[in-house]
Length: 160
Image (cartoon, rainbow, N blue to C red; front, side, top):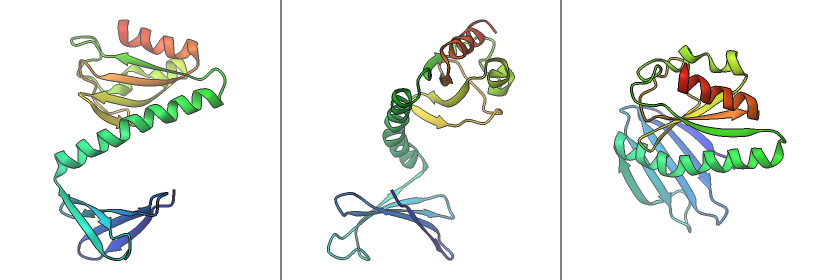
């Protein structure tokens, strides 16, 4: 999938792509933080036939709806392609040692060799969280690695 990026002076950035069925879709990210979802006319790819203005909350909701299933699909595809690769979802128990602490405090990669690829919080997906990402109770940490290493991560979050 080829995504075209265009700088819009004084406005922000526009990202566009063409679907397999030939429809052109774009997202304009304004400097103000607002985002517009743009659907172009099938007969004139330079003319927008529909523009939906999204506030931060609406843009986040759309990302969650589209992003979470894609992460799961990609992980499942990796499992089929790479023998021995395992993904595991580990819940952070409210009040546990890591509730309210930065993810890096667990030193998951150093201690186990596994990688945290996402954190799901209240239905919102945080892909590739940085070590300073603060975990909270009821977060679901998505871990990828070998069977032993992912089990070790579950043990770390369960008992420290």
